[in-house]
Figure 1 (tube, rainbow, N blue to C red):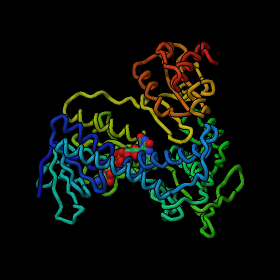
Figure 2 (cartoon, rainbow, N blue to C red):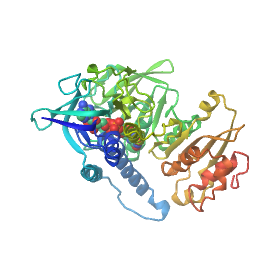
Figure 3 (tube, rainbow, N blue to C red):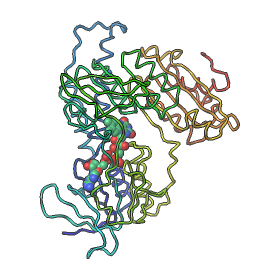
Figure 4 (spheres, rainbow, N blue to C red):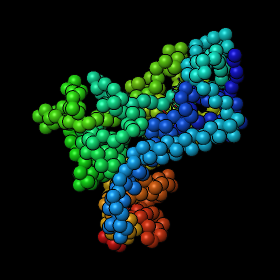
Length: 473
Ligand SMILES: Cc1cc2nc3c(=O)[nH]c(=O)nc-3n(C[C@H](O)[C@H](O)[C@H](O)COP(=O)(O)OP(=O)(O)OC[C@H]3O[C@@H](n4cnc5c(N)ncnc54)[C@H](O)[C@@H]3O)c2cc1C
């Protein structure tokens, strides 16, 4: 059976399903091919489930220190199955929401595995999509005018470090754990590794992080990494930076032992489980790219600024094209691609305006250049910093660690980057994002009167601090 469409989207993750909604708004006849569940990694194995677990960990940790707030609790214990149940319920609710949106937009959802075919009786150019149906029925043939590849990514491991799902896990398996281990070694101190380190520590697990770079969160501003390192260590998380894990040394016995080279010595680390969080790789295999002229670069699909591949009617967005592998980036890329298909002349994405968040405790959020990046780009920079310690609302929350840092061009006064670590900063970064989009100066940020008492006052004070005018410093 064959069906014709204006657009077929391969993969119904955050990138794919948002692109489908935008296409439907623009009057395109659109279908999404999804082999698993609509919502993809973000909804089922990423953003949402991990944040649900982080929230339970935060509640548990806060309850344990409730006496500080004058709230006396006894025998605080954890029911991890209930924690998982809550996480699954949230995911399920959102999943239903996405299914509803597909119906509302009259978007065909084809449940199966899609592959792009070469020129065929259906089409003289590569682009027919053959779908191996999940229900075992005969393959469907979709004949689209345009295609968006949004097949996402999957966890990577180190060569030789085999994921067995029981002792050696990635975030995919860790999210499904029915009970917590007593101890864990996390290989990789990037965003996912640090979120898990923070969460598992707050749940009471003994955590060791082994990071190859000389600092955790190596893509963040140096001062943010340093502060996170200090705060996690203070909590009791063991952090070993500059550690080269030797996968071949992994031994399973009473627990798992793995060795790493660190400061010229080989050291052993033992725990009940190992969590590997060393990055993600694009799902580019077995989707029919060989039937097209599409080019890969370092394992990711290469596109132009409007996400067209070398086949101009085939676009690619989201994790499968690399860059910032974030849900909000995938969905925005999807919108730009669809608007380009519809001839809407969309604005190109400036990735230096994208906010990035780490949902650990404390949280981290940033937008724009780090201080080092700005200097490397040739800017002469000045910096404004303000600590949450002097912010009333942070003291009220009982969470006054961390700071806001503004990186500013000394010559033009342009805001180059904003970096935050502390309470609820992931909900505060959008102000900085807007300031960057509007090309605001620190003066304009400070001139935006921040309500008192709020955590956002730290942004206003940091803006004043750029020229030494912070009030509560
Ligand atoms: C633990 C974890 C936490 C994360 N937390 C955050 C966060 O807090 N914030 C954030 O912004 N990002 C977060 N991310 C990243 C985010 O999940 C991804 O950037 C986002 O999901 C990418 O969207 P996508 O549409 O490109 O791909 P995906 O969401 O991976 O979707 C791809 C979809 O394509 C389907 N598919 C693949 N191949 C085929 C095929 N041949 N046929 C049919 N269907 C196919 C898959 O089943 C999948 O549903 C997290 C990731 C992880 C792993």
